Length: 144
Image 1 (cartoon, rainbow, N blue to C red):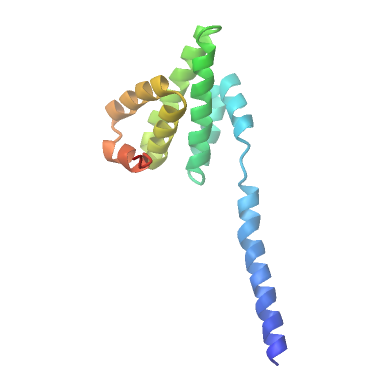
Image 2 (cartoon, rainbow, N blue to C red):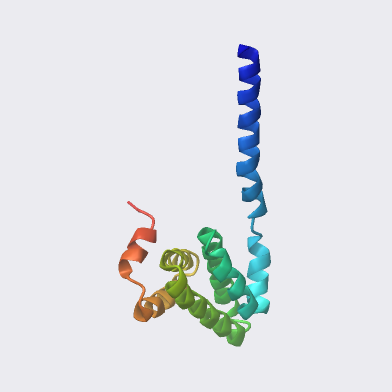
């Protein structure tokens, strides 16, 4: 009887692990694909990022941080594209302020980490737009 209970418990644990890991794998996000989409079609990417912010704000922050870093590199060779990307980042972040302020704050902090001058500009825009600075403080890593 004990062996049967152990086997049943083991099967339940295996089933539970499957139920937990399958949604996680389904939500896996290809950051680089979203970065490339944002560079080629910011409007389409913004729609995907706003939806993704509901379930994975960290991925949204990583995408926007990487786009900001690329825009800094593009300033020398393609300043118009760089300015367009930075404007799209600001629009995305201000839209996030309305829908998910914590995700907006995490995005700003990540952008500031990857591209400080772009991050400073985005921070000014989202704070002026209405993001409370307490969100930014909460999203900032504690540094010694």
